[in-house]
Image 1: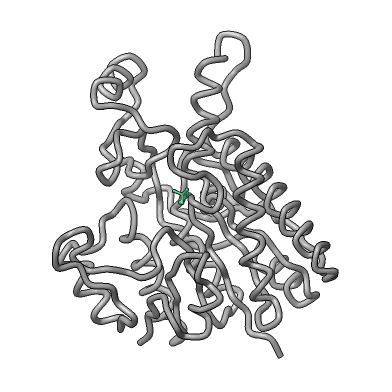
Image 2: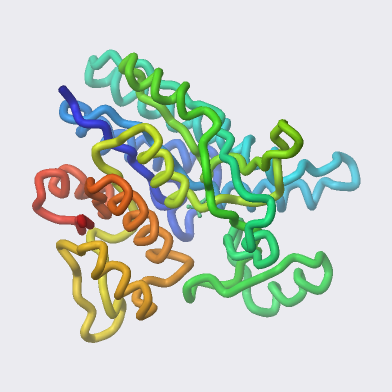
Length: 311
Ligand SMILES: NC(=O)OP(=O)(O)O
């Protein structure tokens, strides 16, 4: 019997720093990602999640530029658009990798709505960076002219930030579970899921972008995954990152992770949400979370690299 893994693929899997965000480049990068993901299929059933920060922000820019001729969509609908476009690209590239290896598996992307609290403080305090990077001067101009809220993003430049509420429940969790039981490779909770609130017995989309690592932890709990794997741009988690005394960690207990988080070792725009997601999944399930770079996923699954978070 195979183990079930929720695999969260990071921004690098789709868009590389400094590379133009064309569909062609995204397909090329995802074809590489597919190569690494297929290698784990002998041992694992996988549910793939992905981010959408760059892509949904780019959609907002496109719609801003065209708003005099075509009305812009609200952010929840744009989240859904990125689930569709990225879900298609992941399904196509993964399918082609399977075909290359003569492996027969069905793949599908599930449009995923995630319930959030309408009173979540995240709505009052936008924190999720989306779209392109700007200089400080450009950011100040955009803030003044368009009313966008701009923040510096982990030393890489300035970006627009949007509300990011905590994900509470996945509307399609039973469908996702059923598909996994039928041996389908599922792409779900893309872009952190489409945020919806409960209102008078109905659901309504709200303008926000949920953090995909938080959503991945929730999904992993709700579908009873054996492991949460978070793929990112570094092979291991570091403390004192980018300082002369930086140290790579092979293993972290939940208690150690909480302590380092409280010390500010993991920035909120990058490693912070991954560690929070790991703490959430491991504390709730007693199972493990692996954080690593997809290029070394094979080695990491054998315990030879990556950072494992356990109780
Ligand atoms: N939704 C989300 O967390 O996207 P990124 O991982 O691309 O920031």
